[in-house]
Each structure stands twice: as structure tokens, then as C-alpha cells.
Image (cartoon, rainbow, N blue to C red; front, side):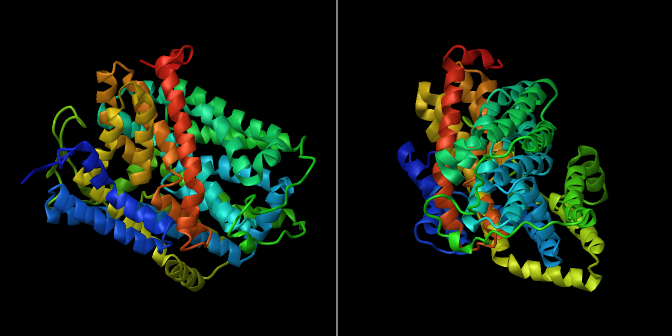
Length: 553
């Protein structure tokens, strides 16, 4: 029997919105204010989501349970699989001492913590976002930063802030391609529109990142390097998105930015070297930061050996991200399992979609093509190069599983929560509340994208969730559909830093487990403020000349 979603179960949209918000409020309050452990908070949020779905929205209980199962499986693969394997690789390099050599080589480029942060969290992280997405950049950069001696809050929080501007074109353009495919946007037009919004923030975010770390004065001391990193990323981002397509936007922009920044540092260094590894002001993790050590010189052979695992990781992740490679691996093994009792039995209805549409509920076990498998492959290859025995490799892998067990459980529960809200329609109720803003819709429609990513943990999922609604609302208000479709994705990227799974990935990568609430409280202001700024830009593009000249109709 098909069950149609109901978006206003109480007949009063304000009351329905408050009901829909209960699961999110329960989980975030438990994390941020009551300091409850993440996996318990996620479990509480999931329980609240199931209760609201069944008793307030009338969703059949078996459907609600099956949607939680689908979400939990998705939490294991691809998200949990990425986290597990990147921590495995990091621990291998730390154990044999090669990570210490890599740390010294990065310090050789610059000992200044601010520029290390710029190079690793922003530039290097953008490359991994473009190649893989789905939590990979935060896992990699946070692990490297903690290894360099940054405090846990600085390493995790700042990695999350940096992982914003590239997200709309992450995983070889997956969010944009999905938006166009699912909701009928012209791919090149909506790609170009996003490419006329995000470059402003590709220039702003590096400044924001260093300000968040070192304060205004500390930021101004290295403004030339920040400007080089931002401009050299923003210009390729605009050009590739407007004239080539979405697939290689982040990869090309990140490579250009890395090359330009490293080349610039050969002729310029800050007068004052910033050595503090902690956030300015109160940082509860400051005492856990590693003390600065004297820079060691290493042989060329040692440097090559230290960088080899990360180069192998880069190559593997890039290759696995290529559509042809992904298609080949999926052809070898990628069984699909429709979730009986849920697949094609939940129906979205207007105004979210133009016509009633049945929701698919299929879990694809694409283990071979998963990004986590690319990371595992690089870890195994690197382990043999580092002369680990097969027995030692297995022992370290089992140890890593034990180390991240609660983090994996948290990711499973949080993805289950997000999937229940999607299938029950409660997240759509929240989105519709934004859609009631009339002439202010360009601003609040952008925040709808932010909310979608904060709830689902994915710009792709947010585009699937709200992309159709953005199109319908734009047509009703005589706005460009491409403008609002792009706004959903561009605004969504700022929600990436507060989504629960990203915070768990960051806390796991830095070893700061059960501190997810602290991380959330730190990044929340940055997330909301940046999302509001995107909303202001979109509003200007909708109504104010000369910004209206940037709109793709």
C-alpha cells in the first residue's frame, strides 16, 4: 500500500513545523548543551524521529523502521567506511614514524601555523572534496593537522570551516549533477550559476578561516598569502564551472591554489611566525596540543618515503572517482537491495514536486567503487611499502575498528535519523516553512539549502530534497529557477560544517571522541553567519543591479 507524505499534519503550519523540528532539536540539544555522548544523543534523536513520524505524521511504523534501516546501512557505507580506512592509514604512518617526517617537511615550507592551516585545510582539503567528498576531506585534513600538533578543537573545527566553498562541486560534481538530473535543471546553466556565487566565498573563506584561528590582527599579518590562496582558487572555480562543467571544478581549482601558494611562499614569508597550535581565546583543548619541536632535517629518501602513502592515497581516490573506473568496478560487484515494504511505497506530493512521485528505497552495496575502498587500497599498498607484515596489517586494522567503534555507531544512528526524516516528510515541513517568506524567499530559500545539508549531511541529498521545491517556488515568485537551484547548493555548503556526521568524522580523526558538542558549539556561529552571507548575495542577484547581470536564466 502506497503512503502519501503529509507536510502539515496538524492543519497549522507553525505547529507542524515545531513538531518536525523535535528530532533535530533533541539531538543537537543533547550534544551541545547537555554534553551527552554522541552515539546516545543520536539514538535519542532517532527515537524522537520515529515517534514523530509514526504518531504525528501517520507514517506506518514498519515503513519508519525500514527507513531507519536504510539510513543505518548508508551510514556504514559509504560514510563509516571512509572514516575507518583513513584513520587506519593515518595510524600506520604515525606508528612507523613517517608522519613525523611529513610534519617536518610541511613545517619546512612554513613554520607558521596559519599558513599550514591555509595549505592543508583549505587547499589540500578542497582537492579531496573534489575527488571524493562524503567526509573524506575533513577526515584527511583533521588527521594531518592533529599530527602537526594543532589542538583538537582547532584541527576539527577549522577543518570543518575550510570544507565549505568546494562542497557544491564535491565528488566530481555529484551534487550539481544530481540536482540537474533529478529535478530537470539544465546542467551547464545551474553549474554556471553556482560558479557565479561560490567564488565570492572561495575568496572570503580563507580569510574567515585564519580570522577564526588567529584573530583579525593575526589574519592581517598574512593577508598576502590568504589572498593568493583565495584568488587562485576562485578564478579557476569560476572559469571551469562556466566554460567546462562541474566534474573537475574543485580538483583544478585546488591544484592551481596549492601551486600558487607554495610558489608564493618561496618569495614571501610573514615577518612574525605564528607558533600557537590552539584557537585564540578560550580553547578547552589547548592543553592537548602538542608542543612545538625543533625542525629536523631529513634525507631526500626519507621525505619521499613519508609522502608516498599520501601520494598513493591521492592517486587512488582520484582514480576511484573517475566515472569510467566507478562504472567498471560497479560492473564487477554492486548488488542492489530494494528495501521491501518501503521501496516505491512512499509518495512525495505537491508542492514539493509537480506531480506525485514515488520514493525509491534501494541500498546498493557498491563496496568496490566506494571511496573508502580506495583509501583502504592505498593503506594496504602503503603498509607493504612501509614494510609492515600481513599479520601486523591485520592487527592494526582490527585495532582501528575498535578505536572508532563508537564513532561508527554514531554515524549509523545519525544517518538513520536523517533518512527517517526524509521518508516521513518532516524535513520537507521545515523547508516549506522557509518557502512562506515571499519577497524574502531568495534569502530564506538559501537557508533552506543550509538546513537540508545540516539535516542530511550531504549537499547532494539536500539538492534531492529541496531542489524541486526551489524550482516551483522560483516560478511562482517570477525568479530564475537556476538562481534558486544554485542557491540551494551554495547555501547548503555552509551547513556542511554543522551536520552531525561531519562533526563525528572530525572528532574521530582528531581522537577527540565524545567532544562533538564542543565542536558543534564552536562552528555553529560560523556556519549560520556564512549561510546568511550567501543568502544576502543571492538576494542581491535576484533584485539588485549589477548583481542581476550574473543570473543565468
